[in-house]
Image (cartoon, rainbow, N blue to C red; front, side):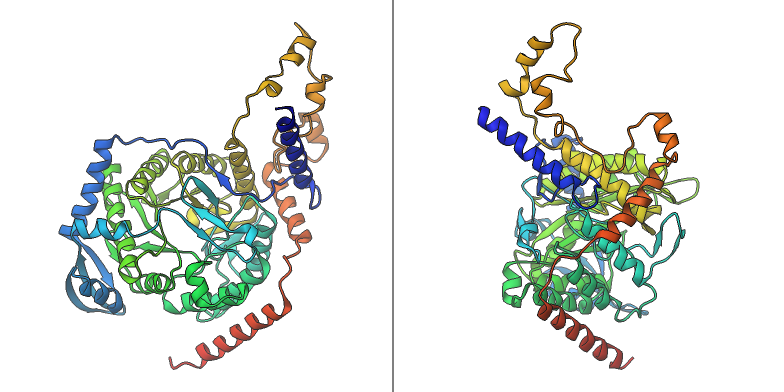
Length: 524
């Protein structure tokens, strides 16, 4: 037992050394996180079945409007009821698809309850399911902000800088599909520049875009080049993940359906996520919002299984509410947290890993941003989430990626990771000898028990300032946001991308250049 205790202290000291590496900014080292706590269940068994049954009834009686000829053909060949509506102006073929409950359940059961995602660095492979917890970065905002330059449209330079800061934070397991939109690059080819940056700057997994077949196919090629594997190997060892959103209420748009089909054909995991706001995009009641979202998620999972049985899927939950005074989205609310908990139950009901998010409506990095994010992270973790998407950097309801918020969220995620570490209770940890040594009215600063642990016993924050007022004031009286600004700049300056074989970089560059020529030369 003494040996095990010493090993734990050795591991803790090593972790502290790793925290202090990289310019002295404390950071937790890379590790897979397994949530040891049973998920909090706010729905009774009867309530859970009622919502599940309502979702199946929606798919049978009301159905989902699907845009995209390929998706309609796949559903029709599988025996679904497809009521074609002809071409919808500017969006192509459309039709209402209805599925019987038994078929939905049979299809959803084909998706695995656990799967592995393979990174460029095998040490950074990820597991989804079985209580594994993955923290992902922000993905998709059109704007970027920091306290020096303010809010601005996303651009390529900020995109690359943001990815580098993500790379320096090991608490972030996965990049989120582009932390911001580089709007200064051509729309048709910007995904290629994004993929090149992600593949060459990070050795952790990254997400691709799902707005159509082309971005998916290009991502698959880049992933194969990066890992130096064939498409057949990638089929067995998936490396890409993407988010596919339904357009609530009850619609799957053409580019999303094409992207989902392309991912399923390649055997790459899809996070099927209805993005819904109660009172606007779903019924105002939580039960109604959950039932509709459940139907939409199950439909996307079923469609992927029709394309390729066994396609890995994540059941996405993203249900919040609106401000009924203004119609503006609200995030990090009590309703959001309750929806996250209930969505976790629905995901477990159908045997799938679960996606949740870290969100806030705040337009700036302030107290509101912190407490709304804290609320949403607790909802995700207590709900048994497998993936906390938008885990770090999200601001302004997802419109903006913030450099300072990235650091604030990384601190929150590091703290959560420490909360999830199991508590050790044994003779050594109980410290009865130290208690006897000190006796009534003494202190423990100088005991052998304390001296053996003082460097490793407590979490060392990256962002928090624990000094008294006088010391804090004399050192510039910097707020947490101002300290976050200094941290991300230092991380960016010190980051060295993991080494990648020059031949691989050259192959990626050649592919990107060729695809740009092909896309730019294609008829309009």
